[in-house]
Image 1 (spheres, rainbow, N blue to C red):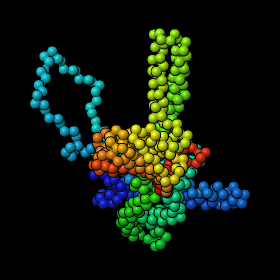
Image 2: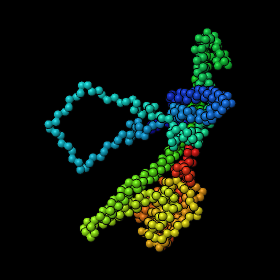
Image 3: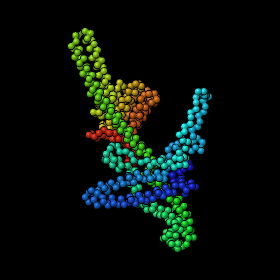
Image 4: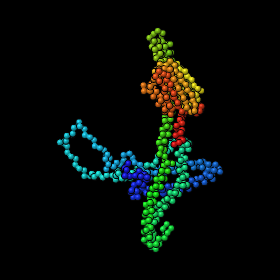
Amino acid sequence: MDPRYPRDVWQALTRPRYLLSPWPWRAAAYLLTGAVLGAVLLVGLAAWVTVGGVLAIVLVGLPLLAATVLAGLPVAALERRRLGWIERKRAPGAHADPSKPGAHAAPSKPDAHARPLAPDAHARPLPPDPHARPFAPDRHLHPLAPDRHLRSPAPTPHIDPPAPGLRAWLSTRLREGATWREFGHALLTACLLWPAEALLLLVALVSPLAMIATPVLLATAGGGREVKVLKVWTVTGQPAAFAAAALGVLLLAAGAYALGLAAAARAALTRRLVAPPDGGTRARVAELTRSRARLVDAFEAERRRIERDLHDGAQQRLVALTMSLGLARLDAPPGGPLAEQLTRACEEAGAALAELRELIHGIHPQVLADYGLEAAVADAADRSPVPVDVGFVSPLPRLPQAVEAAAYFVVREALANVARHSGAGRARVEGEYGDGRLVLEVSDDGRGGADPGRGTGLTGLADRVSVLDGRLSVTSPTGGPTLLRVEIPCEPTPKDGPCVWSSPRTASSSATA
């Protein structure tokens, strides 16, 4: 950004050429449109509340009165656009100052190993183009040219609804703190700000201009004899008229600074209420959190679809193939080469079927979908080559599918690490649910010394848990024992409701955005 052109009114007020710049007129236009907006808003709100109060007798007006809360949304959107009148944004690196060193690209250093090109003896210079026009620099790229096309409205603090439809939109907006701040800003504009802006414009702009026009008014409306200035005092004669005009010039200069200060204060208040400094960041964080939750749900749904397709498709075909090979082996002469080939084919088909069942179980075990996390953990403990004790403080409720899947695979991977790396003789899995958190602990009596940097899968486990706003911690001193603890925030799923993950961080960000 060119330092010679102010970024906003605050910087413009500190410049010596403020009175000769467009900033005083921008400030006046900003305050004038704010006064008009406030007056129109006051009339509209009064009419809306009146109609709603009258129709409330037949219950039709109650929704109208409730919808008054949303009146701040369009007003705030307009205010965010009006902020661009007195605040200036510049794209990074735009309009470099050619008078400063480093504004242009520095010439590259010659390569010591490069050989100069030899001139071509047969080359002829190109004839000049008679229609070519000399290059004229674009005045819009001048360093002092205002970058009006680069001004943009302030970012919105609102987040996108989680689903399409009016109900989701209303639910999201009514839970947002930004909606209530914008409603308060609308009431403040309609009841207090616009009269103050109108009074300031009258005192700082209209009155000095009327004083400056005193000589003209005296010569025209006053007939050259006398004229009243601001309906306060009477001016007779041209010397007094020109004195009043000179005083008006001084008051106009002072009023220009007053208008700039008022516009800057008004813009700061507006930005604080309808476009807080971190509003865009908070909205983006909230939206990223929500999109991450949707991706987790979509990923788990895709895993279940793949598991279902393998279970209902490829597995059934392998079962049918195994049965056909078994029937063919019964019809083949015993002891012959055909019987031996069919026997080996049956064994290979059986092995492929067992591997496919294990693969299906690893993608998404059916016991997890049918009976929940507690039964799935018990099943994983039974499949572990190391003896595993399973204990839960109380029966676990059904949790969101993404949480159950992540917790199950964390336990399964942890038990696999115990069997491969720890040298433990026994392991234990404990868990409980309380205060909106699922807590699981996997411990073993092995040699310890688990290090995520050695590729034991701990980093992948931590990433999987962090997607759900959870936390994974490992305590593994050399010599053991090793304790892996997982905490995932979640809420129980209704028995007949969909298993959709919702983290408290998402809810809080939506409520406070």
